[in-house]
Image 1 (cartoon, rainbow, N blue to C red):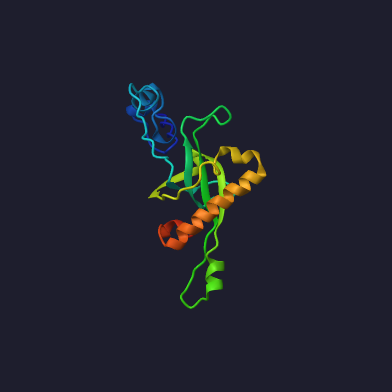
Image 2 (tube, rainbow, N blue to C red):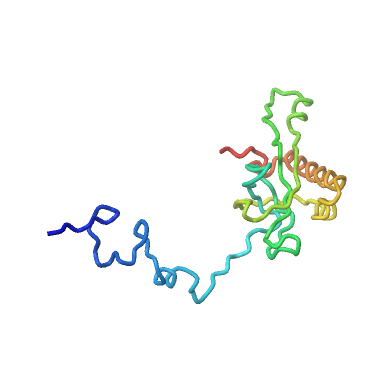
Length: 180
């Protein structure tokens, strides 16, 4: 009498296993019909990437930094056919200040270095926070990337507005380094 050949997992196959592929997942059309492309109605996500929303940058030079959405483009454009956003963020955060420090030292430690960049939504993580920092839309816009002088001006505008808000003591979480 011949012994049955063991299945890849070392147990006998049952009748229900015939349409299972690797690691017990269902293969074939029944899986797709229930969970895949064949759904009759599509679920639309709400639009939550709005100006003023605080986001975390996930990729690139400024990964791990916090930024604010200045302008969001959900549908994409001809040159960027994907949803993206113009963000202004903090590259170098202000350092810790104590009461024992002098005015010069406090002023030096309260400096912020900013950045202005366009990011794909895939590289931004939205947070529950919003800040209402009024950045001048004529200075900070998508046209600044064509000319280095305009880009410097936009970065300067963001830096000034961020430092103003930091000195008022509002939105403390935004001006602290992300601990990770």
